[in-house]
Image (cartoon, rainbow, N blue to C red; front, side, top):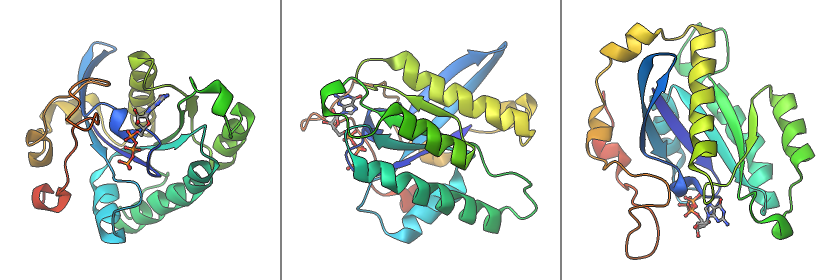
Length: 199
Ligand SMILES: Nc1nc2c(ncn2[C@@H]2O[C@H](COP(=O)(O)OP(=O)(O)OP(=O)(O)O)[C@@H](O)[C@H]2O)c(=O)[nH]1
């Protein structure tokens, strides 16, 4: 299952996991997670990434009001690109809205109510998490996307089994949250998405 993580710069996307395997109801689900680069990317790159994904985590930081204001635009972008590329899809692709950095209580600029109200308006599940403090909360986001995709009937467990790990993800090391930081203290990521994008 392919998940694309979107959101403004510095909200904590790079703290998320790049490969993750979970046993859900007796099935081993292999998640391929694609990070995006906040503000630096051009619209073509974002479009390619959105087309690649089955489902989406749109992340903001509870300490950054601007990143919250960006969520609605990103959700509309995902829906627009998917409805144009996957004609006939009855529903919007699974999207989870994620308010990250909830550990920074004293720096909060976005309340839990704001997040919940937005998620109701956009009809998407919503979680507040801390990627810094909890691996489980991050994994919960991915599991929810899996259940949403199954609910839509877009993919059956059998389809997942047959699907090969994409060429894109073969280039990427397995990295867990808060581990494998590079010299700048940031998790490893990849830069040249277009070189690796599968057909
Ligand atoms: N306190 C706290 N800090 C976090 C959390 N998640 C990420 N950070 C920090 O926030 C900063 C930005 O995180 P990144 O993962 O680089 O943000 P990004 O969204 O990938 O940013 P771009 O790559 O610019 O798009 C880093 O210093 C992280 O350590 C969290 O849950 N709590």
